[in-house]
Image (cartoon, rainbow, N blue to C red; front, side):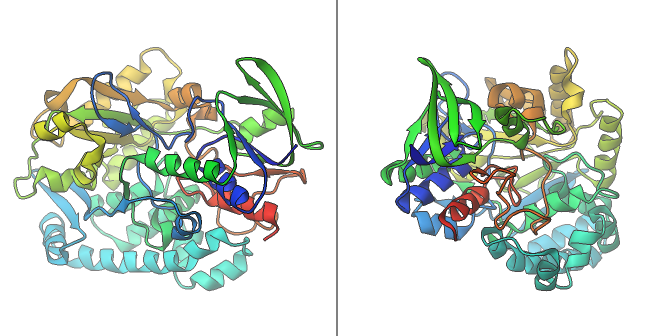
Length: 495
């Protein structure tokens, strides 16, 4: 008998295990894969190519500094100086975090006036104020909606109550600027930002991370995050059993049945923490499954011989690709892609964004690759719901159109700088098959508001007293945050 049994050794399960083991609890983690980390892993994806890519999750924003400090996690997060670059014709919109004058000049050259940079600064001052207010509450007991509204103050209406697409339309006049802002409302989320407040929830989590909203590069890749957490959990006494797939949970007795290469086994926990999607948890409990979630992204990992040339000669490719490089993500382009995907079509010009981890963290490349000028490139494609990939050839078509979308904004085809054989694409159906994510939904289910809506004290409680949800599907879950893992641990400890 263990004090706590945790199903799933992804980053949230590891955070929970580390807190609980350090508090003196006996902890067992059961992990179906042969490695820890879930989707926050680094891997040599291409045989013979010494590049360790963050295969699924790829940046860190929501992980609270308090969790890092509490656990003594040896993590080096590097801030990206260049927030984003968006090609526009033969020029582009550069957001340079180290040079406000250059950013203002770039806005003026693309939009033709000084209005948009003023609106940009005011808008992100507003989101920063909200981030400062909300971020600390994510690792505290849930607040009632009214209390959080009072804490947030003036930004509340624009962020929580009015569709973010309408809000952005009022703040900004330029189609490209509007699109750059709206992409944060659509990452992994298939929604119409003009009508669906789900887009607001997605936007909120993308701008409040750790009180700053910064999206940082973990040195060593995402595996450095989860590898460090696993070391801490083990060092505190937690047991981790790999290749151990949980197949049933009895919430009344705390019995957890798992299968490994020797057969089926049962262990018992005083508490059971489920670091699995709610859809999966229902199956493990033998309960009726809820509505199946649907992921909505195309992930492509690449290794390039060198960075591609830009049409814009005023910006160094190293600047453009070290931040978020927006591809055909103006507001109108995003809306067109959403309409086509809603009608069951792969978008003609898929919106996407890329960044090159190795520009900020060359340690993920072998010495020969570094010396040759090679770089990793990670692409995240929007408006690619799982429903589009249920026919033969759909994945290949989506990849082909996405590469053509990249080519449309570059001075040369991306294929011309791609290392042979170094392209890996993952659709939502691939994530469902490879990573056991129902519908390929990277947040396990649609993101929730960060306030109480009838749940228990921490937002991890279930209908069963001994069973807690500690994965991304918990309230305030989603992204590589460790927040549900922390909150589940606090619930167990009676904090």
